[in-house]
Image (cartoon, rainbow, N blue to C red; front, side):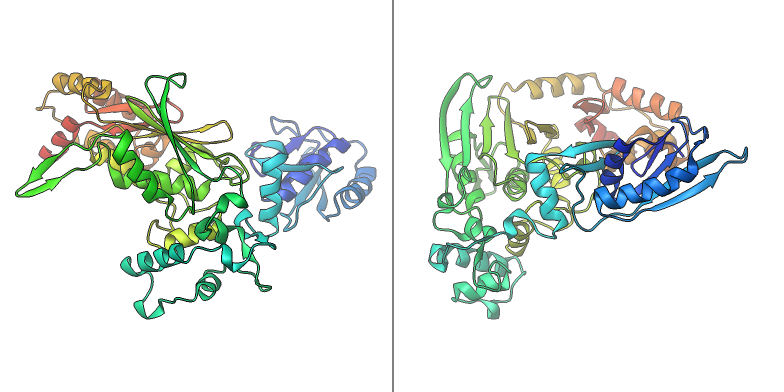
Amino acid sequence: MSESQNIEYKESWRDEYLKWICGFANAQGGRIYIGISDNQQVIGVTDSKKLMEDIPNKIVNYLGIVADVNLMQSDEGKDYIEIVVEPSNIPIAYHGQYHFRSGSTKQELKGVALQQFILKKMGISWDDIVQPFASIDAIDPAAVDYLQRSAISHGRMMESDYSLDVKAVLESLDLIDEEGHLRNAALLLFGKRPSRYFTLCDFRIGRFIKDETDLIFQDVIEGDILRMADKVIEVLRSKYLTTPIHYEGLGRFEPLEIPEKALREAIFNAIIHKDYSGVHIQMKVFNDRIELWNQGTLPIGWTVEKILASHSSQPRNKHIAAAFYKAGFIESWGRGIGKIIDGFLSAGLPAPTFEEHCGGLLVTMPRRMAGNSNDKINDKINDKINDKINLSEKELSILHLIVDNPVITYPVIACTLSISVPTISRAIGRFLEEGVIIRQGSKKTGYWQLTDKGKKILLKQ
């Protein structure tokens, strides 16, 4: 086997490899082979008897854990050692440092990442921590009422369960500990003034022209985070975004220039996954785009590619996420990113891009405005496309997979359809040349977008 998240090869033993053992114990466990080169050739060890005594003792003395240390022998009679490390349910340190295995590399955890790691190992999240000096008087009954009414309207709470007892509602949401102390989540979700307990927990919106040097005006949205999305949408509608009017029969409609449900989902994600020990959420509205950023790195071992693909839900703040779910604002299956992308694509807009940026997640959403460069690009593409393009059965199968999963890779398509990568490459090359699809973002973190003409071709075929 090649080196991976769970396997490491070392030609000879050095005490510094205790860091690697520490990293495996703090992650998902793994195996270290001593006496094997990186290209998996057995070199062997000459002092196997001594190592079989020293290594287990050093693991116990320096790390406080027990690992299986096994003496192995190759077909050529060369001795090598296998160290099997099980994942630990408590944080493991080596000389006061915490190491973690991520992918095929070892990382030292520091700062916020270390804090989050220790909390996770203890089975708690930041919003689980209690505030011993905050009383029930710090809670706004109107915010609690808002949650209950929203939960009832979304079918996630029975009307008969509605209660005027604020403390009882908080207890049902596990936002008060056994000693009656309010958790951080309670004060953020329902607090009259959350900023008294947490600095920079507000939501800031700024209007720019082309870049960050030309700020025109700004707004600061404060208060409980449960009703924050409503306030943000209201401010965006009144000052920042256009609401083109159209009529359907006698009905007058003023939707936002971008899909509101997708925008609201992005705002929910930023609020729920924010690291509240960091700075405020920032939304920058430019002429052609909206940039939404929240403090908070992805879970250890996660990448942007992983969150764009199908994934399980791993909220940073479990109590906050649970309250938003109870209110009917979100689903609990890790579908938020997909819903944002689908919302924009369904509205005929390019999909938003997602990237790790300055210790947080940055979402860039295109705006639909008169003269928008995106519209001009789409017009050129549509002029180029021939409506009478005929796709083969294989090409149609490839295109359907791309539509179902815009971040799908060539190897996944090849495995799914049992066809070669060169065949896939030729098909996608034709799609791009004919304007059936376009590529949004980089090769590594971008995704495919079906054009309007591409949709028509699929409907015809």
